Length: 323
Ligand SMILES: Nc1ncnc2c1ncn2[C@@H]1O[C@H](COP(=O)(O)OP(=O)(O)OP(=O)(O)O)[C@@H](O)[C@H]1O
Ligand SMILES: Cc1ncc(C[n+]2csc(CCOP(=O)(O)O)c2C)c(N)n1
Ligand SMILES: [Mg+2]
Ligand SMILES: [Mg+2]
Ligand SMILES: [Mg+2]
Image 1 (cartoon, rainbow, N blue to C red):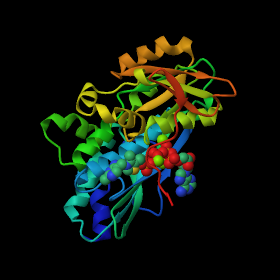
Image 2 (image 1 turned 90 degrees about the vertical axis):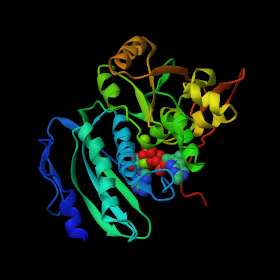
Image 3 (image 1 turned 30 degrees about the horizontal axis):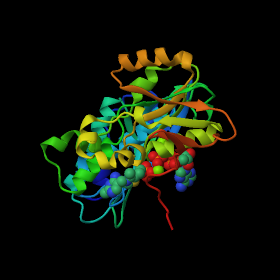
């Protein structure tokens, strides 16, 4: 199958979103939105960096790559609407495997009523998938990292470390029945779109998604808001089996693991009960893990209360372009 036939094969038969004026088939796509702000985000996944043949089937490559992008839309407080895919394909990848990658994206796109509206197809040495997702948010209502204030409660959704531990199990060929929960969390992450849209009435919320581990993400909120983020290690949520199976590395998994695509954020204390209600309504685990402070010593950084001591929580997790 060559480029043209491939594009025909992945072209949607119809578009769900009325905003799509032109989808696949011209030089570019055209959308028409009048009442919303448009969110645009792009993330790339590359063979041997973000996945390899031990960790991720073609279906899951597509699924995870789109999930990572949808998670950034959630982290802005919005709804995903449509996406564009740029794919670089080595000769050794079969036509069937390419279809499976797209099936993985389509499965998730169906769940969110999203449309594939364009992209690009080229040959190259490593499989690489770059996805641009467009989302919407009510005018002026996007959630930014720089809005944390003193006394805010710091929250996180779900449990942390699952994906990194799932990756570890896959890389060490421990993908037995008991490991399935963690492997599933690695291969098919669930971005927190419904929770964050339910929480729309809350006036102010700083927000970030957990792609590189909360040590990183908490620092990003602290730096953007110029406040101190004080986290309590004992309150950070993790799965029971993680503590049971890998107690020695628990600290590492939950703080630096990454790729959980959960949300970390801050809200004023008076909004906490309401946020818990929204979490319940959307079947979302929600945990308070600390508070925001405003003083010279702490500002701009994340701090961790660990074994009775308060220490700087340095950025950790995966960093690209290390030289
Ligand atoms: N090569 C680039 N050119 C232009 N802007 C970039 C580039 N790389 C990142 N950015 C921008 O930098 C900001 C931070 O991007 P970053 O990728 O760290 O966030 P993220 O997507 O939430 O995290 P992650 O990629 O780790 O999931 C975003 O505004 C992003 O659009
Ligand atoms: C085969 C394999 N090896 C290692 C990893 C771990 N990993 C790669 S990138 C990244 C951070 C997020 O990336 P980005 O910042 O680009 O969103 C992490 C935790 C993996 N997923 N697969
Ligand atoms: Mg990114
Ligand atoms: Mg992000
Ligand atoms: Mg990153």
